[in-house]
Image (cartoon, helix red, strand yellow):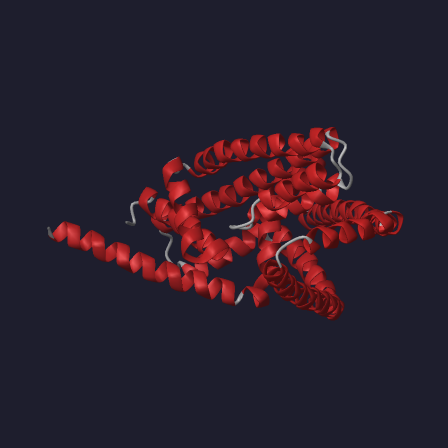
Length: 351
C-alpha cells in the first residue's frame, strides 16, 4: 500500500512539474525562438559537420560554416520554390474567378430570376419567412465579409511590421546555428558541467533518451504531414484539378488542425465539382481519394508515431483524442509530449 501511495505521489509530482515546464516553455518561446531553432538545426548538422572534418580534414569552424550555409540555402530554396508556385497559382485563381464571373453574369442573373419566379408561387407567409431569413443571412454574410476583409488587411499590415523581426529571426538563427554547430561538443560539455557538477550516468541517460524521443516525435509527425501533402498532390494532379499545389499545402495545414482536417478541403471541392461544374467523375474521384487518404492516415499515424517513440499505438491514439477534446491542438501537443516524457522517465527508472 505504501509503495502504491509513493508511486501515486511521484505521478502527481511529475504531472505538476511537466505542466509548469510546458507552460513556461511556450510562454517564453517568442523570446527564445531563434536559439531554440538554432539548437535543433545544430543537432541536424552535427554529423554532416563531423563528416566534413573527418573526410576532408577541414577545420571545425570552416566545416560548420559550409554545412550551415548549405542548410539555410536549401531551406530558402525550398521556401522560395513553394512561394513562387503558390503565388503563380493564386494569381491564376484570381484571374479565373474574375473571368468566370464576367463570362457567366447572364447565367447568374437568370438563376436569381428563376429563383424569384419560383418563390412567387409559394404561400405569402412562407415567402415572408424566407425573405426574413435571407435578409438575416445576407446581413451576416456581409458582416463576415467585412470582418474577413479587415482581418486580411490587418494581417497584411501586421506582416509588413513583422518583416524586421523576421529578418532578425533569420539572422540570429543563422549565426546561432553556426556557433552551436561549431562548438557543439564544447558547449554541450560546458552546459552539462554547469547543470550537473558531478557526472551522473542516470541523468545523462535521461537527457540522451529525451533528445532521441523528442526528435523522433517531431520527425514522425513531420513525416505524417508530408505524406498527406504528397498524397493530395498526387491525387489532385492525377484528377487534373487546377491549383493542385495550393490545395495540397492547405490540406496539409488543415491536417494539423483538430476540427477541420483534410475534409475541410476535399468535401467542399468535391461538392463544387459535382453541383457547380457538373463534373461527376472528378467530384466522386475527390471523395474516393479523400477516403483513401483518411484511411491511410489513420493506419500510418499511430504506427509511425508509436514505432518511432516505442509507445503503444493505443497510448498515442488516446493522447491525441483526449488532448483534442480538452483543448484542441494545444491539448493534443500537451498530452503527446506528456506521454513521451512519461515514457522517457519510465525507461530510465525515474518513475
